[in-house]
Length: 136
Image 1 (cartoon, rainbow, N blue to C red):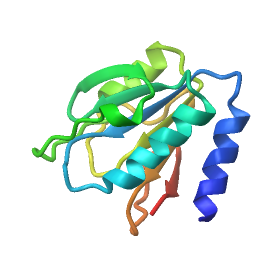
Image 2: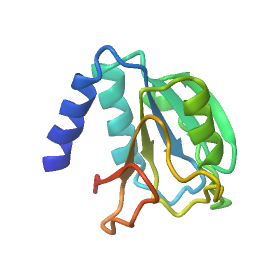
Image 3: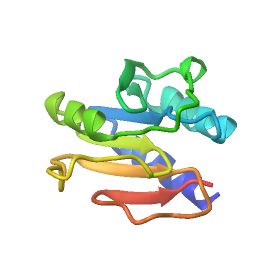
């Protein structure tokens, strides 16, 4: 439960910032209830959050809404498109729900915005940059 309060506080502090929530949709083997609850939290606390659904490419960018997420079965994920999109769109903070097993171009060694990897798993992997938060 500790991560709940931490995430809520982080979202509330971003009241006047441009933020996005990305969801890795490359697998159906995810905790969909947990992910939907996190999306609902963003929807309630900061409804102007952009929801980015992506696997090996960006599938959609919409206002945050929990009942719109579509998962795929191929298991291929690349974070590059989303990270570059956030840079181009001048996103202040990107929250990315993923197991951090996807691909990032080697040329990307950092980002110019705040990045939080929200990991819905018991195992918290090392992230290439940004901060990882275990949400399981």
